[in-house]
Image (cartoon, rainbow, N blue to C red; front, side):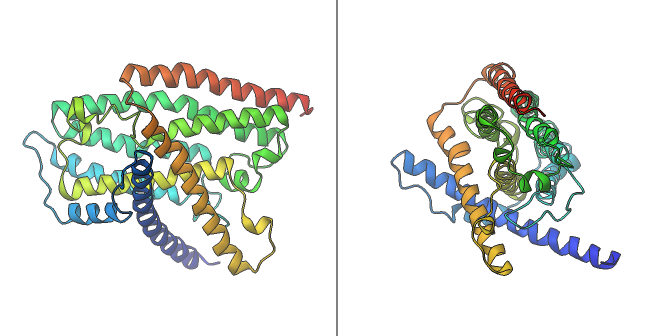
Length: 335
């Protein structure tokens, strides 16, 4: 493939992935709201409600506060959306390989995940609002809190694959092609289940959802770090949240649920591509239900001090337990 063909492939793939991320992200935001409503015995909004909300926001005028830094205030939502879409280019979707192939690994994805959150922090500080400033400070604290258990979950899987002699273990393509469940023994499976639970509890914090939404906390901070945002800028943040929902779900699928239907059922390549992608969306639906909808409906908002304790102490210790079980499993296997 020539350089020109490679460039065109990347451009077309990026545009396609951006459209998919935005449409699927908004759809699954609607699914989450529907799940939450049904669990609370309400009818809830229609699945298309996030699309309606987004269209309405994008038609409205941006209001810039008097004390804001305009270029930072307006640039933050663009950075949040662009960085969320960029992560999609490193993730596999069913049997569809990442646009960037093996160019980036899971460590890069982990660090890119911080960029949308940092963009919200920058936007909050740039707005000049005391409510947004407090919300931005809380966002930074939460960001530092959940990085430890997230890193443990990701590194543990890559380390176990490397101990099994699998080349390039930090590549998401490698992780997806070598399901961790087939590499570990009984103790390792128990450790992986613990790490899967940890990733499920990190996801709401990554997405600023209840019970880890102390940075917005409308009852305390009137919306927190996004309190001054409106119109198109708020709409971009809303779309970025939808794209990041797909990112977190796709990451969980790649790490823990990477199987494809075509691995079990013989089918033509074109049919396999569609079937695997449809199966991937089903897995995303399960991740959204268990790690977002179920948790936010069953829990009340934690105080910021509780959030830090949960991630640094409790989930950190549980994560090390899962890592330890995987390490013992590797020793028992003689690797």
